[in-house]
Image (tube, rainbow, N blue to C red):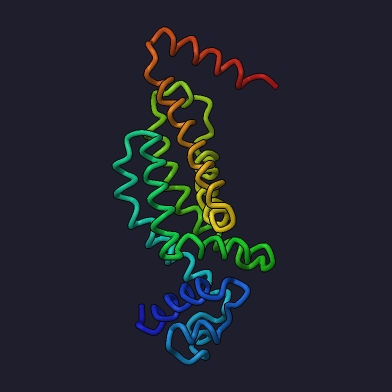
Length: 210
C-alpha cells in the first residue's frame, strides 16, 4: 500500500474521532492526513469508500492486537476482564468509538452498512471462537446459540462505549451484571456429574417449550 493511501486511511480514522461521522468530509480527512483532498477521490473514489476501507483496516488491526490476549482466556470471567481492559484502552484511543460512529452513520447512509457490518463481524468471529472453547462440555453448550451470543457480546461492548459517555455508573453496572452471569455459568460447570446431568435435562426441556 502506498504511503498516501495509508495516510488517508489514518486520516479517516482521525477525522471521525475528532469530528464524528456527521462532520467527516473529504476536506476534514485530507486535513488530518496532510494531503490534498483530491487524493481522497483519486485513491478511493468517494468518501464513503474511504471510510469503509478505514473501518475494515482499523478494526482488523485492533482485532489482531487483542487476539493473543483473547486466546489466553480460560473462563467467562476472564473474558469479561479482557473485555473491561479492551473497553478502557480502546476508549482512550478512540478505536471503538470509530466503529460506533460508523454504525450510527449507517442508519442514514445505507452504503456504510455492509462494510461496517463486515468490520463488526471480525470481532464477532474472534469472540465466537473464545465462547466455543469456553462453553465446550458445559450444559449450556447444546442449547446456546454461540454465534448469536458472540454478536450480542460484541454489540454490547460497542453499546457500552456509547452508554459510558452519558452514564458511566450505568455502564459499570452492566459490566457487573455480565460478570455475575459468568460466575453463575462457572458454578454450574463445577457441579457433580449427576447434578449436571439433571440440570442439562431441565435446560434441554425448557429450551423446547414454545
